[in-house]
Image (tube, rainbow over all chains, first blue to last red; front, side, top):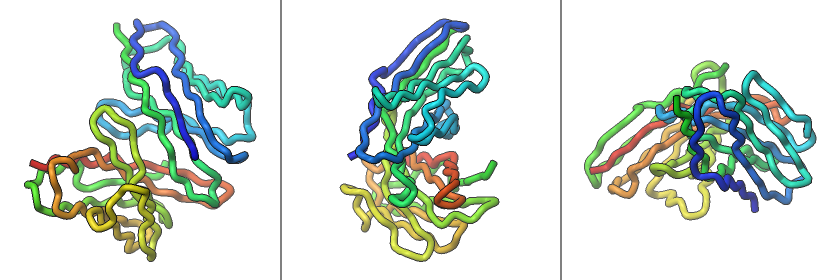
Length: 116
Length: 117
């Protein structure tokens, strides 16, 4: 069975602070995909990143960075110099290999509140 | 990027009535679409996988007779909530897959907020 755990229910930071959102996953597949999505108050999911299990390189995109560590089954997301517009719910998700469908298993989500 | 639309964006209906929600891939063909449900302040839960031209595959615990899914074309999947009750009030989100087994993308619709009174 696949499972995604986002232990942080809610995080509040002050603008310009760095913040890391944790994601721990469980799967028996050797090939899988990990995702992060942002859900602002409007409700629409915004795709942030997809990483396959064979690519452990960390990624940086502007103020966003991701740290993937298979040894600890973690895929953490860091926002540098947070801004009020970053306030949203962030979901980490896991998907099995393509041949088993692309069903996403979502974590419970982390509410991020960035105060000015 | 590719666009997935949902209609309506929100709907209020009376208990006992049926509601149809459409999910369209606007600029690509999607052999597979997914339907998710999200209760307030909760995560997204997969309800069913919708494949064009075949019956939908429902997740465990989802009533197939209550949530009717039809994927009649490569650009349209519909979810009908039959005999809706207040506990069916939720945010319903669809997604569509495009690409190959080697390289694919999944795009989400904006969601439909259903309120049953």
